Length: 381
Image 1 (tube, one colour):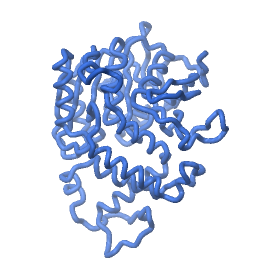
Image 2 (cartoon, one colour):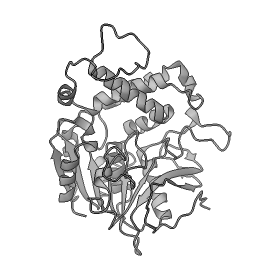
Image 3 (tube, one colour):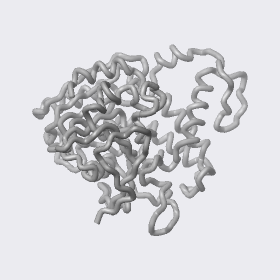
Image 4 (spheres, helix red, strand yellow):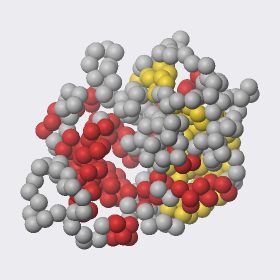
């Protein structure tokens, strides 16, 4: 029987920022075993209609959370990660649609992850947390939308790992999703992307404070996680954007302490200070073990896993598909996104590909608001 931490009136309009939770008994995992009980933290905006078919699911990226929109500060792009796209009159129009965003399993923003208490041992899971996949994340989200009374999704949309989830929705649950927007994501990441992610994970595990994953809250591998973030930030951008912003300028702002507290060796470049800042900020808010598990889920994802072929997997899609590539994306190259769109078309799917010209690399899906909005507007809801 489904357990619930909290029951809400699921068709009320949210008037303030509120993170809600839903707990269910167990989730059978793609790579074997089960996880349970499972809690998902989520937020909603707008109202679910009487027929339960005006819902939109927004899926977040690696270090994201359920806070895709901020009701109290709706025009501030820094207040929530997709704030400029969500709200009354915006593309994800909360005056018409019931918009949902859930923190993924494995996360550390309210959903069950490595820092959660294992009900068997009474201690945090740590590295005893099971291996999770993008498909597991989507199956957990499916349980959530059913709990909320959603019968059909008008759209699923997300970028990066969120784009992988959106693609998986189209394949795993083809009968209940009308439209899917896959932004800066492909059928599987490249060997180069896996390599970068593995270097990031090794930097975390090499930190003595990691303690094989059994660190105490507030005493984790901040140095390793900060360095992992520094490396990731390089892959999220492009050479052009970094030259435009930093070039070889010396540090322009108050210096941020390097994660290793190392000497500067002849001064500091502005780009170094920026990376130190980004690493420090993530280490303050994110769980290192979650970073290990979620980045690995990104690597493991292959939409064709469990099917006879890629064509067999993509042939299941019944949704209208939008694939968005970013011209300077280093992590998910635009050519890979275009290739996937072509594959869906080849097997008879309704797919279109649009490319955003931007110097901002992979991060463009979190920066190029006007261009992204214009692309999405062509994909009418």
